[in-house]
Amino acid sequence: MKKDIAIVGVGGQGTLFAANVLCQYAMARGHQVLGTETIGAAQRGGSVISHMRISDQPIYSPLIPKHRADVLLGLEALELLRNVKVLNPGGFYILNRFCVPTVYSNLGIDRYPSMEEIVTALKRVVKKGYEIPATQKAAELGNAQMTNVVMLGALTKIDDFFEYSDIRKLVEEMSPPKFLKNNMACFEAGYSLL
Image (cartoon, rainbow, N blue to C red; front, top):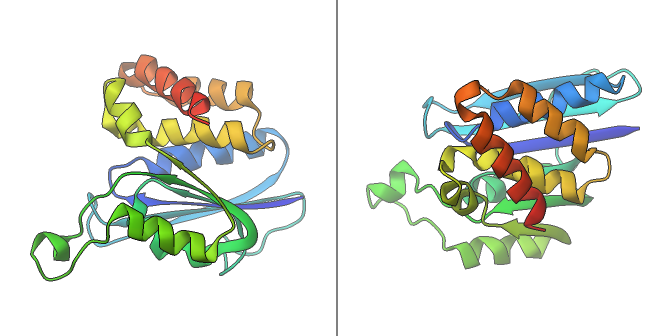
């Protein structure tokens, strides 16, 4: 058994929390897990990629090579497109239909592509993908910063490797008390979006 998962987004979106939940889940099931993050220059707003490698055999590197990821979760649309090369041909992505304009696009130096352009480009290179309004749903439930938990709920619905009740329990246990109620509502909402 081997499963490689990449979560991409920008700083402040909670990629690290989501990755930690998935790593804890895999370790509790007795699998070997290696993970790491690559974080852009800015703590908030910079590119963040979380790599998680899960296996029943030894793992020798925490970084997922090109074309090896089974799952690519994109908390931010352009970051998913930038990192689609990590996904293997039989893998799938979950795209949060949400854009965070880059510094260059805010300065008028570069143009941020439209959501339609991003989706069209993704569909040219990946056969299987899902699109959900995770940030919109999290905002409706009280806090857009809980996008990551909406995405976890959606992943649990799509991928049979992740048991709904176990992931839900980890989200509950790992959520800070002040976010617990909203996180649980966001997890359920993500599960129901697909």
